Image (tube, rainbow, N blue to C red; front, side):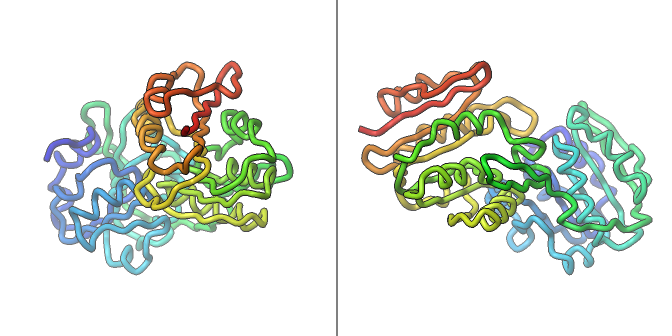
Length: 337
């Protein structure tokens, strides 16, 4: 039961605040805290597929995988518990939507770790809520306020626009490469050529820039693009449409929804799990990749130079090469025999 984050433990400590409230949980939910908080009604909205899979087994018919939570459901509730993410612009994007729907005088609780930047919520939301700190513990803070003015939300206002080799890329807050196109992705793209062909799987696609660049270079490819983040998938779909590139786009936690084999798997894998360095995602991606590659299929990924996946690549594929390297990133290539 108590395998909870410090922020969730802080909420549990203040459980008495929620017993007579109808509560929406949203934001950077990392555990099963919603199962332990006593409320009149609980609904959980998450835009992360891995979180949804875990929570939907616990709170049947109360957990929703959605980027823009259902307005009718929100209006049936009087309180929001929002978990602050590490990215302030992502928090602002999500909260502006939520607070444009909640009724005035709704109860707003915001919780997060100090190093996530949660203290900035007071200034970010000051035009709509006067947040006050009601408790702290173990480097986490719980804020509370009453919504006195609804926000105005327009999706188009949150896109950043980028261009790479004539491709037009739009990204929303919380999508990797939102502020600028990642230099690691650019290095991976620079290894592509016209000889690449067949079915391509882009894991953790983000904005879709890697796959679209490959399709732009080689017309002999068929793209499948996956991510756990609905914000990324929306950005990706818009970018494919705007650049007139075909591709199948859907949610998958690594290979959880993959049921076929591919000629190539490409990826710029994350090295952080929330605020902590974690290599487990990349390690599992490499280990399991051989089950989703055709004979002589190829895995091609970009990683930071200070990280080494030599052992796991050689154990899985028996050999690998580094296609390209600079001061910050390197591109690994491994092929099935």
